[in-house]
Length: 226
Ligand code: ADE
Image 1 (cartoon, protein in one colour):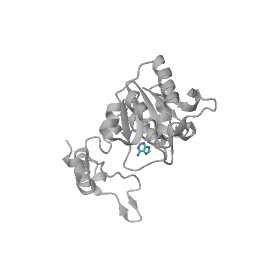
Image 2: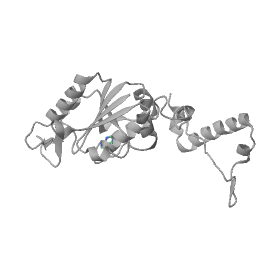
Image 3: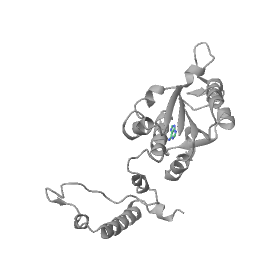
């Protein structure tokens, strides 16, 4: 899988992909993540990437030209399955969408900034718009990092224990059961007896019950979704 991210603040994305699981996926050659500065594609003599809104008011709008040039450049190199725009008014991101995206070969993520992009970018260049939640971030970069993180860990081979993605919260519309590690008794705070029993079947039953009860208590809406 190859992900190309277009941003006006590439610095914001340097750190998230250089650690731990994502780094391992890159090192294993399973994923490629390329960050591009939209400014590098600007034909303006001051390398401007934004301008005032025709409608007036505070806040700048990202102009079409540098974004179109960046996308055209990438598309001339290879085909892309999706061109995603991160925006608070996009489709609400969830595990189902992460699963879908994890099956793609190549994708571009365009990070909105300031007041967002000129509407014509959304109409003519973008194929999917994603919001990571009903709140407004200062830019789409952190949203892009969230999307990439959740998608990349689903790519086969990225997680060392392949089954661990399957037992994630939400993967089957249930929250994960609680987990414990040593010591079995910390100052009187005890691990449930069943987990020390060594009886795998009973432990699995206990975990399923816990997952169901936790979901019912904390996120009942998940049990109603198809
Ligand atoms: N940009 C600003 N807020 C955002 C959000 N909630 N999701 C995606 N992109 C955003």
